Image 1 (tube, one colour):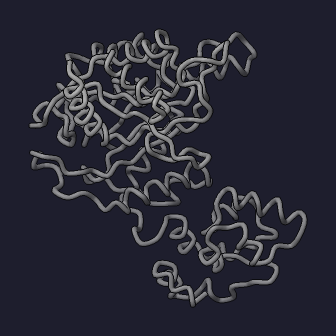
Image 2 (image 1 turned 180 degrees about the vertical axis):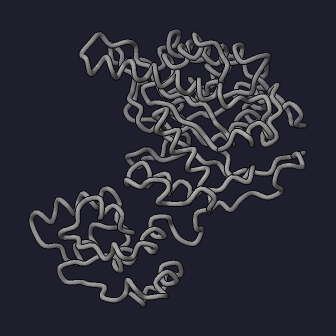
Image 3 (image 1 turned 45 degrees about the vertical axis):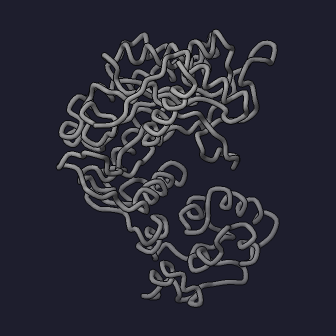
Length: 408
């Protein structure tokens, strides 16, 4: 095959992979080798054109094995009825591309997904073959994320987790009714079963470690993730976040990703003609963060049939709706109260707790700790600051939303 054809494949199959957002590698640790060598043995984790937990922007080769699919999911540009250019990599081509890009320092790993070729077993088998070649034939120790396929054989799912750092299975839509209507070949029960199987394998190692027993081989050490498409159906933000809350609890997911629906060529009439506001996707991520790191229950953030406010972030919206809990005294409040204060994050709350052991904090001290002093000021008391009646003002929300900070 000519290099020109390979480039054309790469253009088609990298573009087709852009709709899958669940490709972060946060939480992964590098695979060691006895001699400290091996292709991809570098420091740090790998994420596709995103930011690592330490703030570094790092990259990941993100492609499909093929964009042909026997499924006919209405919201997917790669569905069988779509009139799109088709392409397919061989396993060897994916391996060569990964190693070539890595050695040029373009990437730190691979995110590999695929449309369904022939059937689920054949497709996942080809993806596992790619990972096996990288790990065993080329001693590749960079990051690998594989997209699992529900209904594939259990031994293939097992092999995928042994070779990959992270695996993911997209639930796609928040409700089973929408999944049946828009993706009739997909089975919500099969998706849950596959997720449960992955969690069991991950938990086996954790339980063995706690018992100080012989450890089984590492299985998807960076955990599993999923993606929910936002705006392809009528599901509210409350329903979407309710699904996320259940997924986190039942399957121990590391991350739920939210992807705003994008209108596709030759779309079915039952799909929206416009994308939802990107702010909606952003607010869902903020609310998800509150559930995972700030101690919020989903019901505190948004009710089942309601959507998040677009004009203000969900923590500030909660604070404005619970003004009786404010202002909080940064010199006496517990960690939970600090975490629920607009403008204070996890790191800033912990720094406040550490610093106030040594001194009474002033507003200037808080300003040196928090990123947004103008946001936090109406909601706190410090050694030299009190907002007085500001918290009760009827125009406080407007001031927060419009940044009319002279009120503060």
